[in-house]
Amino acid sequence: MKLTFNTSKDDLANYLYIQGDLIGDETGPKLVEVVSDAINDGAKTFVVDLSQVRYISSSGIGLLITMLTKMRNVGGEVYLTAPSEHVKKLLIITKLNNIFTVFDSVDEFKKKV
Image (spheres, rainbow, N blue to C red):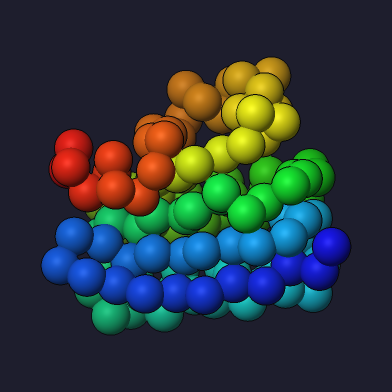
């Protein structure tokens, strides 16, 4: 399933809503560019909504780590929201659940921040 994405922002964070399979294809660099642009605009908090992601490959994991590294290099943070059961298992297996803060939904993130 081809990857598409939308972005938005509010007073709390910049949001990236991903739909499809996160496999690091030609859309991957565009996702990193979205984070880089947000950093250039002064963003410190980035939320990646995974509710519409079915599958993440090792390249997709690399993209998430690249986004996190870019944000942490400027004192920021990347949060993940609404991963499917399959994606949750992947985060646990790769121990990324210890690196990323994961919320059940964007609304939960907004309540807890």
